[in-house]
Image 1 (cartoon, rainbow, N blue to C red):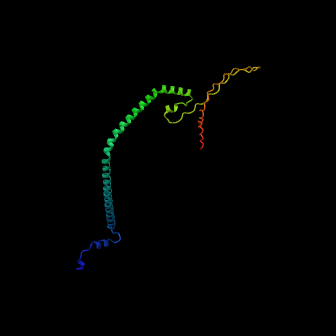
Image 2 (cartoon, rainbow, N blue to C red):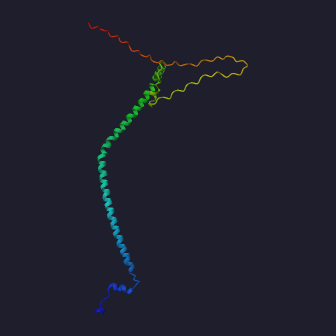
Image 3 (cartoon, rainbow, N blue to C red):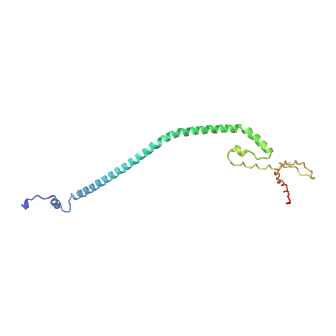
Length: 183
């Protein structure tokens, strides 16, 4: 009966010898199984990532639910504040334009008393104004050279009055203490 046994699959492949056509198929099937396993691992990681993103989205939605109402209430107030500030700036510009003659008058009066100019108040920059450059001295008109020197009439330059130093206060004399004699 040993001769009548059917051949097994393995024995059938051994009959082909070294050039087994099914050897390449076995390798391809193994590679396919590894590829399917890696694909399933990738799908599992993708599912974990999507679960984490879902958790993040829930947290962001909760944060927006908490912050959204105060922001909706805040925006109109900021808009009103900006409009009011614009109107206030317009009013202040109009006021400064209307007060310009008064400031000019005050500067004229101040210069009469030797006070510094009020330009620092007008600019609003908080910086002192640049000092005015001194006026150059008046030059005599050019004349032709003459054989004789003739005196020329020169007008003296205007001198600004010097600021007077405030008078020093002299301390008042104390009355001398009276001596009383012991009797």
